[in-house]
Image 1 (tube, helix red, strand yellow):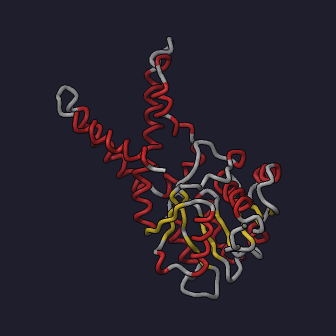
Image 2: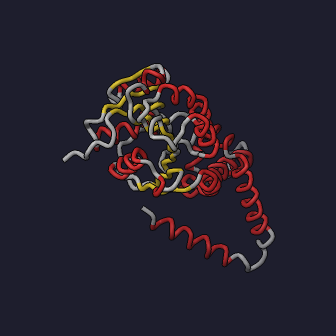
Image 3: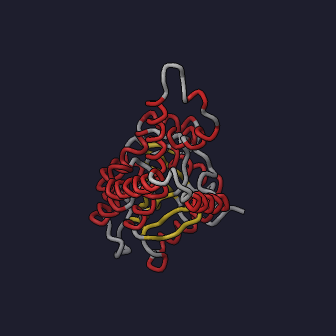
Length: 292
């Protein structure tokens, strides 16, 4: 039996991996919801080829018009730049939500264009699905991408509007696991558990490349351990540019903490004091393995 419709028409601005996956998830769990996609011409062509959305539009205003949910899955800077146009075109009863990997910058701008205290205009809800792949693009979109994945919403559930609660129902229906926090806390947390690991992979790749000589050593000796560690290095800079630009203070602090940890290890290489570090790392790894 189909789920009750939390929304009738959903505009998806950005039909890449995240936007495309949401569209496919809606097709799977809410087949009666009409989806309209906005993107660059080549992105829309790929979305049409995969039958990801019901309709497409090359203009934000026409894509947003008539939608009661607007899902902004554009790169962060592009999303921020598009907010005034989205706010101007959004229906009075619409909910506008984004999927950006940093939240403070876009939520601060959204506060200038949306009045969430009023029921008479479009409302904005910051969001971040903690789901993805090392590859981007609609060709990698997956209806189950959000299943069992954390989905961060900015604010508190007790103060959520009815529109936000409907979005909460939608997220749970497609298998996501929503939770709430403020934008500054979000950006600090993802700086540690998401942005730092990405830069660690990039830095490690640089060391391996620089140390590899004309004979192919040491890279030719690498096994699956290095491949597993460098999985994140396959993520393109185009995905990370805006993330790092809009979270540079938290990322810088995370890199400082990493440098301190590396220095600690370096000064104890000739001692027997590293066992506790390995035990702590083992425990954290075991904890992560238990997660869904």
